Image 1 (tube, rainbow, N blue to C red):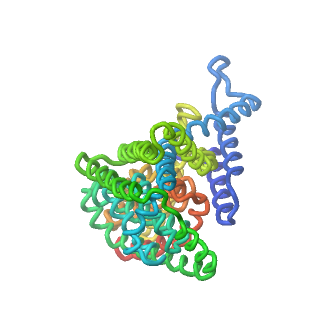
Image 2: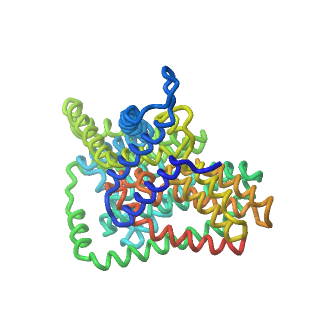
Image 3: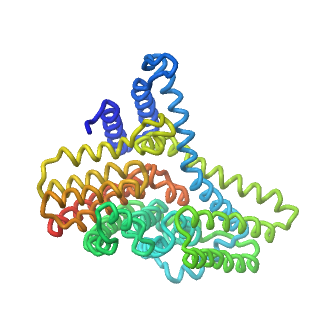
Length: 470
């Protein structure tokens, strides 16, 4: 295949957006312009069924404006599930804060998490283990509710708690997926391999990526905290002075709430519930707990009003975080075939996949170029924010390269899997980090920037190791 004007426009706009991110600028306007441009260029190729002619420039302009609205509406629909779960978990936290149960729940965890350095690693490894069992999205809600308040109390800035959750969950956990095995199964099937072969081949690459990325992030955190000691001590003092209104009831709720979520995890493991279904179970549990906590705290009469206020606050918080991300995601979702067909028309193709295929077909072959091509294709296909959509492509490319060169196809496929998931699963693109950003109450663009240098260092180290294994 050859790249069309539509593909080139998408590449140019994506490059402009990434540069704006690196310059720490907001990217909503570039994404809006990008949607208009893609909508206009695509509309020029549409044939009017009545006149049997291509749309005029005026008609294409009208169509591009409609595309802007339709892409944002469909982006909102795509993100609605995670918006709701974040809103309901935040509503639950509001009910707990009102009662003082969050403060009680922190006491036993304080004995384990004694300082901000320990908090970074304990949050991270807890997120990793839970992500392996039930995937990162539901894990975010659970870890956020249980450990974030403690992290703040011991002086870990919330942005670095978010980095820890993001890197260990959506990066280290999702890119390996050793328990549920969704990622290696998809990659292996496309590469013509057994999933166990891909998982075995991925281990040295995965360890390299994990150690380098987490290590660089930790040292960046230490450097930043050294420059902000005064702010951290003030935050810690403010959290410690919190008052508990009903200590007996608060203790019961502090015991029951984590027990309910542990029961959720047990149910998920027993019935093999994961992904969106697991997230839905967490969200439903959070809403029930919101109502129960409010009724026990305020009494049934007053709870009718107060529970509504908590839910309103939860949705206000969620929409405040997600509003710009819905627009940003609307542009990058256009690179995915399924989304593009909903918005542009049934003949639309997956622009990101097309670009990846073109790249793989036009690069001269050597071990280095095969590794760089697979890595680049993984990076590009991950930009749509789906951690798994690019896996069939990188698996297929690894198999193709194995037929024309002497390479370890399992290691090459594993490398493509790791890079695809780290990008698309959500660590360095704002539209991919929104679950963690929302539950932590930080800007998605800021979280993506914090992750960028550690993840790029991890990519570089993993590619170097890959040269010796592939």
